[in-house]
Length: 110
Image (cartoon, rainbow, N blue to C red; front, side, top):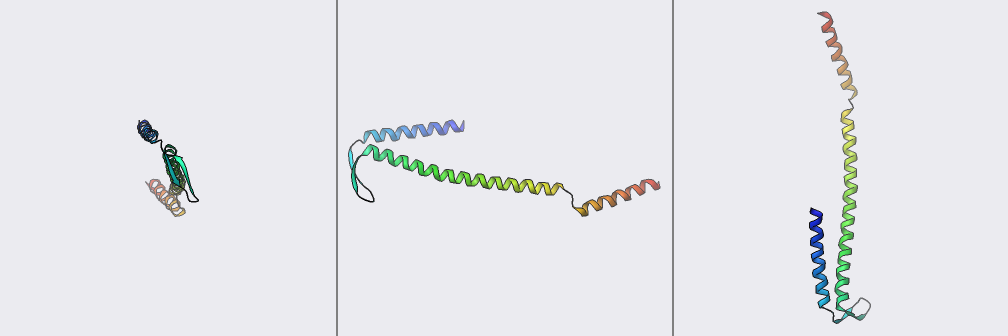
């Protein structure tokens, strides 16, 4: 349901941008770093929206993969620490043997 909401919202925004770009079809002067040129305003608007979308998507992808890698590392740390907690220490094993021997002697003497 959440994905459908985002898709509908994105579709509405795309339609609004397209209508805005089609209304502005006049030619404008564009100043580049290396010079100037004439371009239709519709191309300038659509190009700006496209570049903004690509930049936003690339930043989001970098963050997604960084979080995914961190999640993987934390999961591996979690599994390794839970495995360590399951294996008894040598001192614990000795205490269990001594306790079980003491219990065994008590039951034999009765």
